[in-house]
Image 1 (cartoon, rainbow, N blue to C red):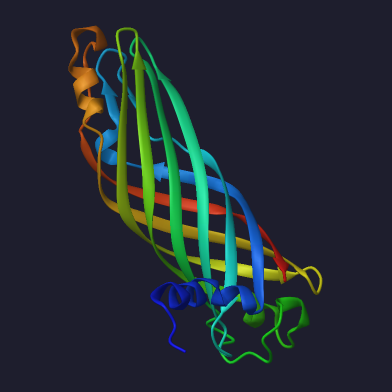
Image 2: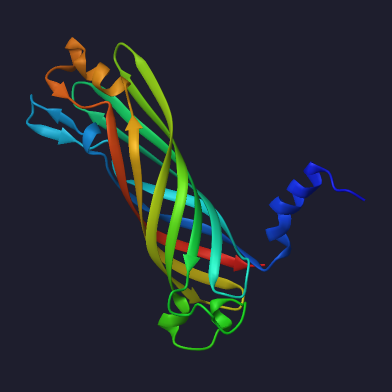
Length: 226
């Protein structure tokens, strides 16, 4: 009996659900640097960083495709930021990121079993340390609210991340993971930003429309082994 295209696609999408897997909840902080969006305030001789640093929360799902210790971890995380720019208005940012993380346990690639870190034998550093390669994309929503108007700019951009993490097995089912990841967005656009600052009511303030964005994301993940 021939399989339909939908059947093949369903098997491909839900195949990880039939494997040993882990569901995780992540909480951390995101430190943003977007040089082009930095507002220079000539009136007060100050600067405003947009977007600013924020708290991030997310979920992920980890599974392995082979006996080597290379894990695939699709994840979503969300962060939001808001800042008041003196005599201008409110600037806010929302970011939803999807990342297809690949975790490589660089000191223990062969491992001793396809099981949680808690059950593995050997040196704690070797069995817990991993490097992450993380291609993905972000949905960025930038909002500006001033006295006379309200603007929203939406942008979707690819990004690439790299990082390090460390698994600590708390029990047979629960793993605590600490991590530090860096992400890079090559080009982001916010046309409403320089436009708003060019209005007479905004005074002597300047910023660009285009920028790259660098992020440092640090935090912890609690994973439950199915």
